Image (cartoon, rainbow, N blue to C red):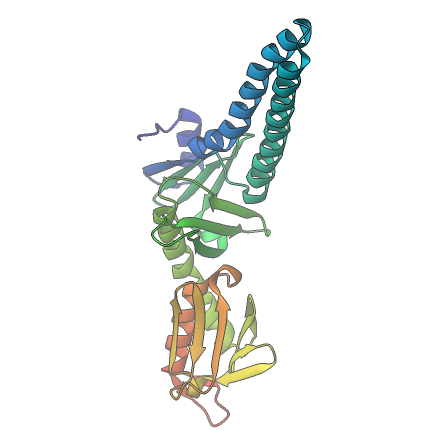
Length: 267
């Protein structure tokens, strides 16, 4: 469904030089669906209330008792599903609408607009959840902006996977040079449970030296780096690894580079 770009969004994007608008990703439908169940349960409770009152007034209490019990059950269900929906919406933090531009995003969270240039986004974490075989994958994308603010995308948003791929590609293109520069400067950088340093990849106290890194990748939601024999393998869930794609690319570049006698990367 086409979602128009409001003038306020276009004005903010123009002030931040985000370029031409591309597409809007609207999550309001997911919010409405989350609140549909408690609304239906509340309606059922109201529907049972009238027979309960009539039953008690007729001198035949048992039909009224049964209707009253049904009304109480439906009312409890409405409260429970409403609290669950509210908790889920707060936990995911999914904004109402994300407006995609050539050079960044404008995020509408229902309280105001936040503008983010691609250069201001420092990390992205992408994970997919499939509740059953053959079920549609529900994508969750968490972007970290300058200052540490996190923006959660997905949670029922249509085409969240498409948005995740675009955001991941833009953030990765900027993260890889930063990571490479840090390693060449003999610094250590932490990406979730992994550590990238001048001498190799570390995790949980173990280290895989750069000359030994033969393969790195992401498979079935797992990020890995391993040696040629497969004797040393480091893995972690992609949902726990910020900039997982950048991690893989850096491992491939550094692993294929030239190293000194200590295993450090040299130009």
